[in-house]
Length: 140
Image: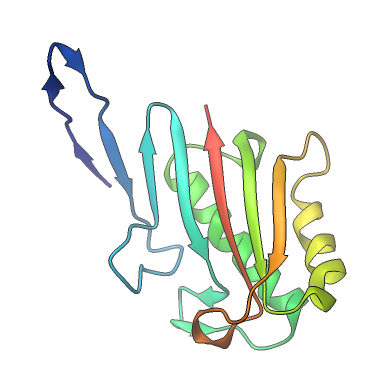
């Protein structure tokens, strides 16, 4: 993790931005961070079902892929000092809405009480040909 101290602008203090990185989730494969924390809010980049130990997309269908995505999200939450209880919003991207029910079962198992707000929709295509990608926002 690294911290970027923000400056002041016209007498107003800007917040400190903390970049979150953990080896327990897949490394960013582009010009983005795994997560950024600013003002007590954690913004987790969309997670795809890559196993961080192998660097490869997990085998199986939507259930196995969603399980890996949720593990990746959890690893980033923990690295930043958060938990699923702190999650306030998720956006779930699916390659096919026919996978919604199975994705929802895995996703819902992490939020048995007080689930966050959420949007879920199908997109034409996801990176690496995966079936699901989920981005998350958490607040302390």
